[in-house]
Length: 260
Image (cartoon, rainbow, N blue to C red; front, side, top):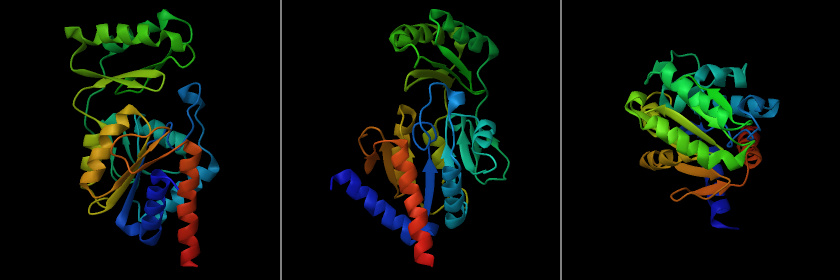
């Protein structure tokens, strides 16, 4: 058994034996759901909803989704299930499923969004996704246009009129968001709220924007796992989102079996 799989076995044992001492934090796209050709084609299976709902119950609400998507979009994607969540790469925080959303950043200006959206003229197949606080341009359908798109986005964002923004490269996409907020800072704040406070977090993520979170998780005595690639500082990795879903389902099943 390799080190990554061994670490996952250790994590599963820890979670199963005392879920009330753990917090489960999960990125969405490419982590617990499969990457789709377009963002709107992402699908959440009934089985995944059931697994997350049971984890929510078994941990006492200490399950949170950590995403670049807005919370309103996350809720629609997982409906009728609602979980604690971080949205907009840290622009939104909701410590409990029914609690009020806390806003940590303003949305990108409409003028900047229009300039970025106009880059779709570089080629048919570049898709524009307005996430409210950020804007993403996807080039999965035209991968050869990635370098030109990145250069054009960089040019726009380095102009004084763009303001303080950050460019986030992702999997066949490039996203622009306000500077000063991130998944890592939001996770650190989330871990100060009940029921997450004083727990050991388990975080799973797949993209560049998830990497800073792994350092935060270590500060709370938790463990981090990447998806599709090994990232320095993580405890292990999963090959695919399907493997993550199976692992989470197994934790639920083993805990329910232990409870009789």
